[in-house]
Image 1 (cartoon, rainbow, N blue to C red):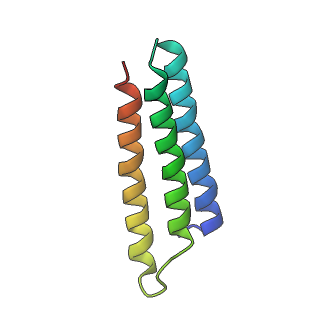
Image 2 (cartoon, rainbow, N blue to C red):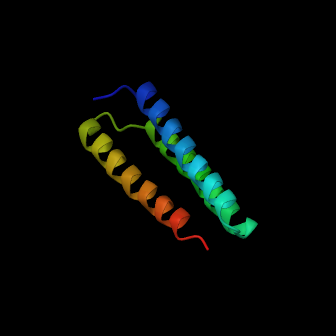
Length: 88
């Protein structure tokens, strides 16, 4: 199991990559500013939410917590990726 510090660093890298994709999509297409800002806001909220969740781990269910954290992060990340690629 990875340390919380490593997970927070990896989470930051994921959020940064998502933000880069969002900005790249904005510059490659003629998009509405509101749509891009909403996706950027959701990326920041994702990072804050998952970072906060790492700070409050139930000590009785550590393995289950981290498995659920990884699964939820994958789902949330995929939703944002879909939103970025479906911008028009």
